[in-house]
Image (cartoon, rainbow, N blue to C red; front, top):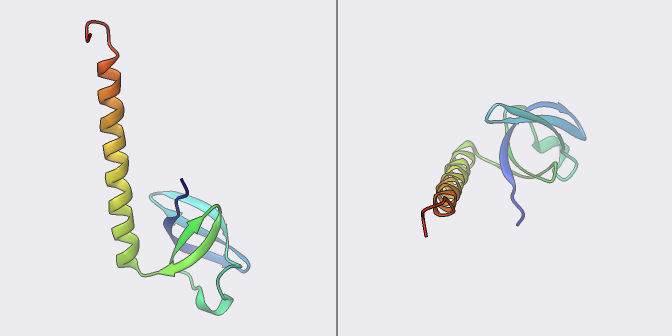
Length: 90
């Protein structure tokens, strides 16, 4: 499965830049977006290290809400699987 995550551009040295999300910063490639359309503070979707689309903050927040929910459900499922495999749960 491929996942692009929303990040906020915090530094630009075109064709690369630095983006941040949830306390994590990463160097990203910006060359897939026109140089004059990306500014510090913009939100972008980052996939395999490249900004592939510019989005607004509202969309970035909505995507993070959905991703957080998926991760929460995965954690619950993993916890349930661990409990099922404990001795005495036959």
